[in-house]
Length: 204
Image (cartoon, rainbow, N blue to C red; front, side, top):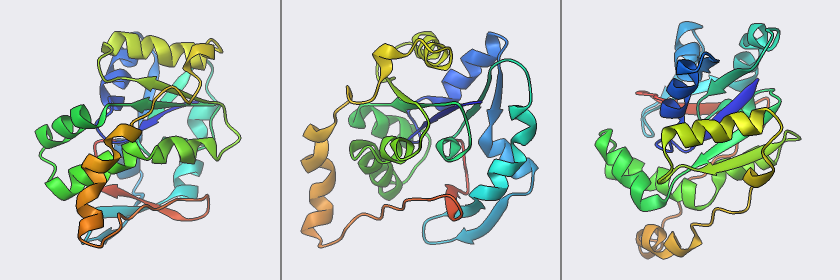
């Protein structure tokens, strides 16, 4: 299996749809979690549900046994056992516009944009022993991004190694308000054996 992950709004769902249109099997982790009864308790303050990562990982075993390439997409997919991880990226301002178009409130927009600036998901993926690749989907077409995912999955991802994407110039714009108010943003790391969380209106 190959994980397609990234901050919400970076393009996972669109890339997954493109791969399906080319005949590849792609597991929608959000739908998989719901259909397998893996949603845990509700964190009302953050508007998220807990998910047991071990149970989720075990529930994907049937896909690992299949022949050919199988992808899974969702912002928890990099915590699952797989052969490669592809992290989709997006420039913060564009990401914010996409999230607002989805109906995200400003606090949720800021939380996700800050996560993207700090490379949170990329760092989590890099903490594994699994090969990691990243693709900047800010202006690239869906087809081009899907081509990149396939290149990484097929061992042709030399030009997609992490380190080329840098949003550090956006730090002041997106973190200044929190510093002025004396708050720190909440970042959670989810080691295996713990719980992660997904939005109640989870779209991967």
